[in-house]
Amino acid sequence: MRLAILRRPLVAIAAGLLAITVLLAGFAYWLTATDAGFRRLLRLTDRIPGLSVAATGVEGTPAAGLSVAHLVIDQERVRIEISGLRLRVHPLPLVGATVDAE
Image (cartoon, rainbow, N blue to C red; front, side):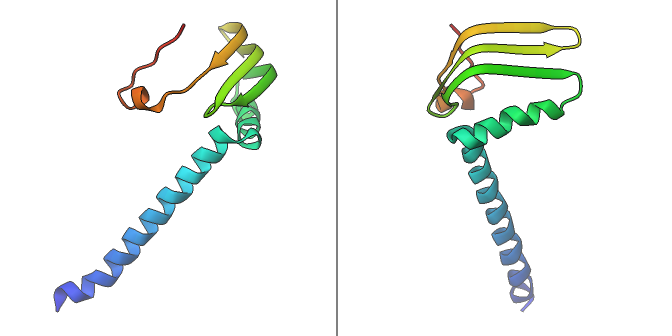
């Protein structure tokens, strides 16, 4: 009897958590796999105080392979300029927190 009383709220909580997980996964996919999502991600950096990010010649998406002709990241204490940036993401090494740069 007691299990039957708890079953309905537990199913509702599980369904809610599943829905939130699916929405977050869809949002992450949109940000990284579509041109519109990635451009929105770049615009969101303008809201971070003390940080300026300027990218020119952007082609592709982070999920499919990205190239940036010139990238400037300007922060109060540091300025980073990168020319000819190419990014290819391999998700499996990211699970083990492994990042490889050439």
